[in-house]
Image 1: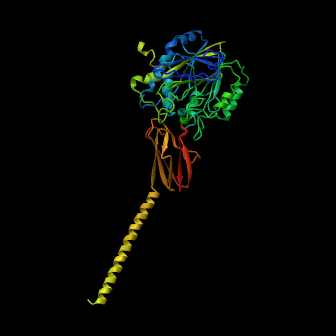
Image 2: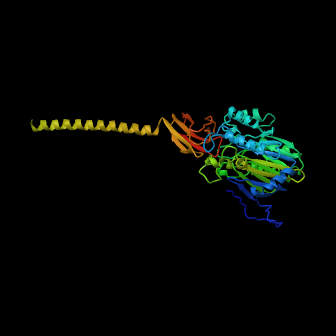
Length: 328
Length: 124
């Protein structure tokens, strides 16, 4: 089953069917993926039947990286009693890509209960990845009971504050943010004044033509605040990125893919490698979606991102763990 | 037995009956009072965590009451006082956390992992 939905066009100045001032939303759900190309702040999305486009972008790409998320090592309940096996399947899928990603982003909830043995298991599985560099940001499940000290000792040695940092790869500026610490009763994800001040300083001297990729665990846009799927001070962070022509925001947390474009910013959430969660508002709570065993892997997956230098474009391809499996 | 004697005996019996009845009533009353008091000050109160919410979401207890939270979700939660009075370790499925409230007051709390989950304990 695949659903691809787009809101009605409100502003179509170029008469090309693309709403640049409004937004387009697409969703990959159950057994398929969505291929998105961003160029100058405009998202074009195709279903996986257009997968050839993704391959073309991939072959032209000068920077290819991949996102994995929400491995929840330690979870052992329905619908996935073996999250180690599905994380391994995700790594196998990454290893089978036509080009090896230069690095991986893990957008948090590496573990289920912040336990050292859970982190050990993830590290063990990721050793089998052809890609050796992994950049992490913590999810709320990674900072339970110890305010993220164990997580930072393992994955965040060169980070600032609660674990935020930035780095550059082939002209693209990456910013890893932490929005799962010091959460307030009744609130959403939080970045905090200290992190925002650091971020303002971090981007101050960058040229406005620099492509920016921001990655954090909880979505930096209001997906569904009733379930805590948003970040209270995200608008302040995005405000700091107004001068940039190309901003991509990669998140996890909601265990399903959603995309949205607002002006020059493309938002994207990744699937989990562990268990799916319900679509916003379709269940009493965001607890694990219990699906039949033969459907599970069609709801888990990875995200493959290609950047083509000089074109200000990122191609974002989501693929599930079940795709291609029937051919192998 | 003459008439006067009969009246006296009747009076004595009546007084005895009345006294007995009064004693019984008082005893019953005491039991009722104790029952009412124990309803107001139970030793323990349970709060369940289901579907990312605390139930009952607000409870009112007497000082000295122990409140026990049980996580019945497939996802871990915590019970953390907003004013830093009490704080549980992470509660996995079916794990419990108890705290005994000794001082009257209002104690708001939340799950530090899912801060949309909030609850209140009022201690009288």
